[in-house]
Length: 596
Image 1 (cartoon, rainbow, N blue to C red):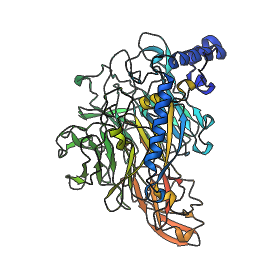
Image 2: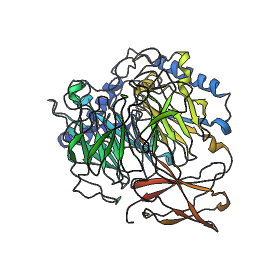
Image 3: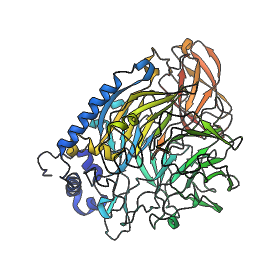
Image 4: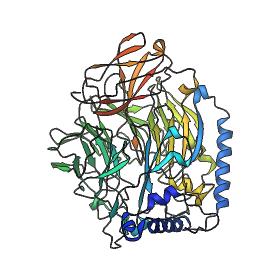
C-alpha cells in the first residue's frame, strides 16, 4: 500500500480492518489494500490540527507531570511508571482471566481533537468498531497487542458495507465461565446516539467473538450486571430511534434466558444463545449508564444518575422496589461508584463518588437499611472519574473532568487550563476514612477514561480519545491510544508475599481449598478481587472479599470460600495474599462455581 510520507499504518491494524466480504470478493491481498486505504483516509482526515501542536502539548504535559510528582514519595503515594502507545483508545476495557486486557472502541475517522472524535452519527465504513488484547507479559510494544476484530455485520444503513461491529458505547460484564458479554453499540444512521441490538461474547482463551441472538431492542449506553444466578441483566440506553426521551430502552433483558442453561465451563462459548425480557417490570431510567450492583441479599440495586431514580430489582420475582432519593437532589453526570468491601461478606453498601464537578461530597447507600448517608468527601469534584478497589481495601480515584469533554475550556477544547491540573492527580481513601491526594498522571483523562487493577497489583490507566489525539507525538503511526501504569504505595514498601499455587479447577461456595506459599510467615490475609469491566465511569463487577485462613502449616494455607453466590456471583476472581502491611502477592485466578 502506497503511503504518504510521514504516514505509517501498521500491518496489525490493516489485518484487523480487513472485511470478510472483501476477502471473498477480492482475495486477501486486495482486501488488505482496501483496508489500508480506509485507515489511511481516516488518519489523514484532517490536516488542520498540526503535528507540531500535538507534540508541544504532549511535551508540556510530560514536563508538568515530572514537576508535580517531584514532591511525592513512592512508598507513601505510589508512582506512575510506564507510559506507552496502544493501537486502541481503550474506551471500553475488561481484564481477562488470562491476565490480559481486552480493549475496544472505534476505528479513527477524525484526527482533529477540536471536532467530534467518535463516529456516533456516521454511516457506512466510518461507523466501525475495533478491538485488541494487550498482554502485559509481553511488555509495552506493538507486539504486545493482538487484534481481535469483532465480527463483520451489516448495519442496515443502506450502504451495503459490512464492517467490524461497532460495539462502542455498549454495556458489558462477565459470564461465570470467564468470558465477556457485550450488549448494544452504535447504530449510526446519521442520528445522535441510536442503539444497536448486538449481543456478543468474547472468549479470552481462544480470542474469538461469538454472536448471540439480538436483543429485542437496540441499546446505546446500557448497563449490564451479573447476578448471583450467573445471569446478566441489561438495562437502560437509547433505542434504535436515537437520542430523545421517548427513545429510552426501558425494558429489562436477561442473558441467557431464564429457561436456558448457565455455562460455567471455559471451553464452552455460547453461540446464538437467546435472551429474554422481564414480563411486567421495566427500568425506566431517564439517563443512560446507571450504576448496577448485585449486593449480598441477592438483589440488584440500580442507582441512577437522577436523584429520584433509585431502584431495587429482584431477579427471582422479577419485581422492582423504589428506593429513597439520593440526598443531593439533582443530576450527577457520569462518575464512579463502587460496592464497598465488607470483610468476608459480600457488599451491602455502595459509595457514589463522581458526577458532580463542583463538590467532592460522596454518598453511601445501605442495602440493609435502605438509607443514604454522607460518605468521606474527596478534595474536589470530578466527572468522568474512575475509582478502583485495591487489594488492601483502599480506594484509588484516577481520571476526571468538569463535564463530558470539558476540562474548563468547553467541549472539544483539547487544551486544559493550568487551574484544572488537580484533575490529573490521584486520590486514595485509606482505612481511616481519609482521602489523600497523590501523584499526577501524564494525560488529562475524562470522558471514556478507564482504570483496571492488574493481577500484579499495578493499575492500568487508559481512555479519553480526544486527549489521546491531541497529545499524540505520532498521530499517523497507527498507535493512537495510550496506556499509563500506576504503582500503588504497597508496591514500594518492601518484599511482597508469594502465592505459589492455587486450584486450577473450580471451587465451591461454603467450602475450603488449599494454596501454597514460599513465604508462610508473610501470609496474613487472603482476598478475592473481582476483575474490572469498565466504560463511561461505570463498572458493575468490582468486589473485594476477605477469605478466612483456616490453617497455615508449612507453606500450605487452607482458605474458606464465601458462603453463597449472593456474597460473590459465580465467575473468576483474583486471589491475593497480603502481609501485615497490606502488601499483596501477585494474584492467581480462582473460579467460584456452585456445586463444584
